[in-house]
Image (cartoon, rainbow, N blue to C red; front, top):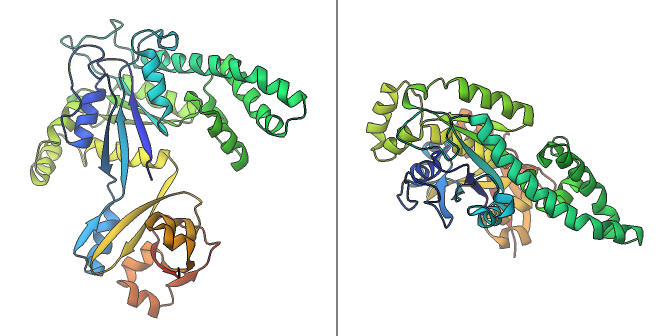
Length: 367
């Protein structure tokens, strides 16, 4: 479905190292100087989900196919980017193309790795990037709202509909606050209008605190401060050590499990980044299962059964009749489709059914 998380931040905070580990490739050059990433690199990664294996075991599936999400490594931003400093214009253009922002913050000390502003302060780094994004949004809205107000005064229906949301966004920005603060509790129709404005600070944010190896398990004062900031903003935060993740990415599953245990970690930090990025986009997973394969599929929260069918194939949505649906817990507890049917836990759902995370589905259609 093409959901993308853009990895952003100041130069030399670990963006490309994180991207390389995420995609288990070295396509993004990781180097100790600003702008070593010029063109955005894109990589698809599997979304970790322990439910897949359990369903596959019960179904006797030959193959397991996870759902996927894209991460984009974007060039580092510097102060003044909103006015074209550094690679500012390119950075802003690239970030407009993603659905959510993964903001990497440097929360470690290392004299061998320079900081573009000569200090280690994760909150100040976050504010630098956020300020540039807000300035870009202010310029964009200031330019557009004048014409929208004129059209609204002339009784243009579209302008009358869009103007209130533009004015709310502008008011937030003028008070130094990101537009994403409008997202909480927003009505569906207003959300659609806001998304249509394509403002940089309206995109949901995940702060990734890149800490030293010794702090990977519990974080440090810098990452604690970021967590507090994220909570106040309605954003999310995750603590990882990009150095550890880069090492883990080169190991076999058995070796990585041993390495993580030695570091006091239960799972790779990247798993948390991927899962949190997935949740940040308000996505859920449903499953299909059979002897050939067990597969995870992605839909947006609130999607109805025909939309879920359409993710598999457009013909399924066009000719949708019904969907046999078994909740994940019932599927696993009872031991599969046949037992779920016998227990009355396999439901035939129609066009108005809202898909729930973990549903195991079999679609009936006629084209």
